[in-house]
Amino acid sequence: MKNFWKKYHKWVGLFFSFFILMFCFSGIVLNHRTLFSKAEVSRNWMPESYHYKNWNNGIIKGTLRLPDGKILAYGNAGVWKTDSCFATFADFNRGLAEGIDNRKISNIVRVANNDIWCAGLYSIYLLNHDSWKEYPIAGNDERISDITQRGDTLVILTRSYLYTGVSPYDEFRKTELKTPENYSPKTSLFRTIWLLHSGELFGTPGKLAVDFLGVVLIVLSATGIIYTLLPPFIRRRHRKRLPVKTQAKALKTSLNWHNKLGTWLIGLTLLLSVTGMCLRPPLMIPFVLVNTRPVPGSTLDSDNPWHDKLRSIRWDASRNVWLLSSSMGFYRINDLQLPPVKLKQTPPVSPMGVNVFHPQSPDEWLIGSFSGLFVWNPSTGTVLDYYTGQPPAAVHGRPLGGSLVNGFTDDLVTREVIFEYDNGARNKENNLVLPAMPDLIKQQPMSLWNFCLELHVGRCYSPFLGVFSDLFVFISGLLLTLILISGYIVYKRHHKRSKNKGCINASLFFCL
Image (cartoon, rainbow, N blue to C red; front, side):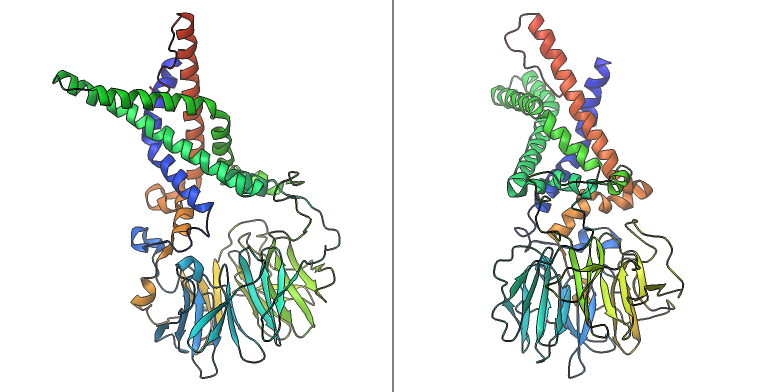
């Protein structure tokens, strides 16, 4: 059994070191999205499914018709000025912050005085002729979820708070929504594990601690590779009677650091590996279904009942109420100073949140997400599948539905157009043909953060792994866990044997 652990640790560790390095580098970037928001990656480096084709991959989320008949189309790559046929396109991003991640636009609205506003991930902007002017929201350090309007009132929704402003919009009033009736402070065990894995459960210090563990795994991988590959090189130089003192010193240093870091931090590195396994199928399923009280003192332990739960908001003029979409469901708000009331009969929404929140008629709304597209009447509670006209199938709790709806518009001459993340533009009958995407848009890059997300969860390996890509994180976590355990076992056995023999130096190689 001892030889098994030695061989497993050596050869599996050597083979898997590339993936360990990818996990670590991408994880560090994921932990600091704002810091890397200006960094971009060409989509040509990615598999074919990540290339823009037929308006897919979130390139269009919605549109706004201008008084002159032109249209502003927006989505994951900023704002574009086009016509009602989608025939001509011009870049309309002047004034927006640099970096594709900063140009991820959630919505564009026109207020009563005809001012046009848009919301990126971190800022809101006012259109001034053909350029956008940034308007900072004092005191806000969260990502922006949505922007909407009611008359001349501009409403900005962050992940936890609501901000309102009126002309001239020099100041935005911060509102913490009231606690809804029957509110439970519990959170899913999955979310707790997710934030523990990233370190965000304990704020910036926690994220820095996880970053440190990522660096530790990088050092363990590098020193293991050095100790495996350097001895044959040293032997060849020795046979040729060449000096090997420098190489031998590097070998010894690698061994010492590998042993020390591997044994001192075995518990924390194992925790990082196991929590990562729990965030993807199959282990994630039971954790999603279990709710627990927040860890005391953690970022989840907030007095704000809406902490990190707000997703989208719209004014329902026919009912004279606000409709709020959150990770806890849909709510009706009669007054922003009153507790929101939860609505019981609502459309299925993917955990990734609402992508389409569009008025279909005075009584009905179109609600679209990665769980599909639905026509919803909030007064009667009627929910019908947009494509079939039938009540939706039971997709609650599933992360993905049959149609990955990412955007919608009814401003084109072709009337209603749905944008699906994977398939791109289509209509209700699925016979829509839009003009080919111009090269200007097809060449838009991917943010480094999104690239690292795809790398971290293994989706970018799907062309090589096929059906096993969904299990990539689980299998990787299992392999890494066994690599760490096997190395600890091998080291301890050698350490114990050396002590029994009275050896002064018991630091035999941890990664044989």
